[in-house]
Image 1 (tube, rainbow, N blue to C red):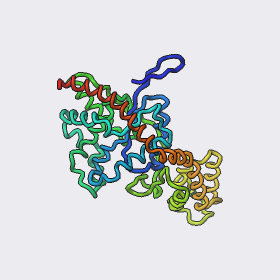
Image 2: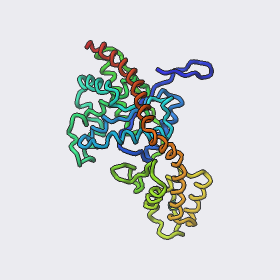
Image 3: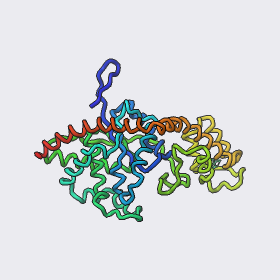
Image 4: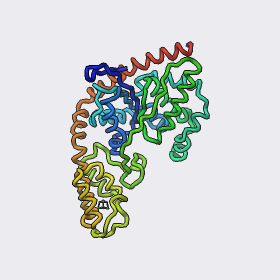
Length: 337
Ligand code: SF4
């Protein structure tokens, strides 16, 4: 486990593992709900962040034509928002084969009903009706997630409430393995961090599926176009109708991106019917453009140096592999194979 010097003492940092599927460019929901938290965690934890391309295959196995492009896009976005390869281990899941090996070994000891009762298994089968999800890979993805976490003996997994059952499952699997063989793995714990949740342009969950997102990389005119299409307080018909900012999805964006004084002014002007929704949207579009511009500038730099991005991922995989292969040696010894 990595160490750092603090106040003259050698401090041991706890390890974190988290991952994101490569589904293309990263949107604002990912930025505020996940990535900015990951950036902060780098100060206090030994962070392993992985682009989980095997996981992408569990649902999108029929068309893999863009997966490498998406992996690259995600890596560029990660670096642009401040994930730092000098402080965190950034890597592609499939570049560390030990994930697949541990997944296989765990599949020998985990009863199928444990996987069938994971809430997202049935939920996603109901929601993603355009594909056949009666595959082993889809059933087994929480097991693969467990392998991702425990192969690094991660202490914490930063997740939202909806992912808690997955970490609970990982803990159960760890107990089963440790009981059958010998204690190799620590039980990972959930690191619940309160992160803001941004809804999509139409008020539903922000998602690629619903096409209701703003990407970190969107150009100013694209941002403007998308913001102008956003839903606002439906009761506000005329400009001087008193508005209800706290029921307006657009205002939740202002809360994250407007300076305090401006936010108070928008709130009050909306409630008094002084500002119209079109002006309010114009303001948000400008605010977002300004907020995203530093990321976009860095993004352009990384895009012009693809070799550097590949090198970061390659060094990350090397570092991850060293930890993962040491764990696998222990696993095999414990299992007597
Ligand atoms: S003025 Fe702004 S905050 Fe108020 S309802 Fe319109 S878009 Fe929402």
